[in-house]
Amino acid sequence: MKAEMVMKKENNKWYIGWIIFPAWYLIGKKYIILPVIQSVFEAMSYSDAYLITNYLWNLIAIVILFSLYGTGILRDIKQIRQYDIKSIASGYIKSFAVIVLFTILGGIMQFVLSSGNNEQSINEITLRMTMKEHYWAIMILSAFIGPILEELIFRWFIFSSINKSLIIKVIVSSVLFGLMHFIPSIGAISLNELCLQSIQYVLAGIAFCLVYIKRGNVVFGIAAHMSINLMHNLMYLVNQ
Image: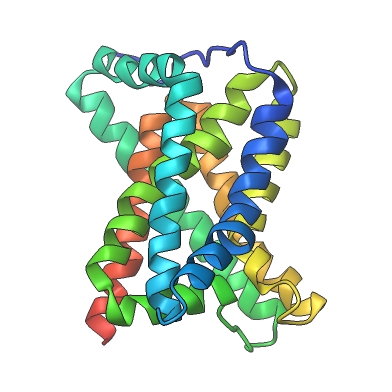
């Protein structure tokens, strides 16, 4: 069966998918939930508070997302049944290959432009620090829960919300996806370093957009996203 499927337009108000959801995603954890957790549980370590904040935010996001748009999401996910096994395997392998290619390209560009001074983002540093104490909890969060929500919000929602050119959707989706990952670094590093760190994330966002456009089903993006994050987490475990 042909792998590509037509993306359906959802009857969603554009500002929910393009502004409210991404804005909540970008600032909700760091500036709302985390301060509340730290003020309520003053003796709690930062890594514990960070972990609870992430799980709580994801729970809230899942409830809101499926309460409002569960029917459309499940409809698209169920379309995977129309694929045969060969198409699913081929689609997954090609999707994963695209993500890996763009990840490597982003890493090379960031390394070259930074003259070899390739530092980790604050988001990645915080995640790695928390993994030292809560490896499996972070593994589940970053390799499974996170990719599902990120693909639903930044690909499925934006691409199915309104009829705009694919270029505009790719730009908006990729920039917002990049912001989500490097916004914790704002104020902690220079603007030049921030721009350099954003390259890899924005390119990854473009790659996920290309996968969604090509396959027309969010399941392939979710599977590829899970795989690349799982690979990163396993590499971290091996290097410890």
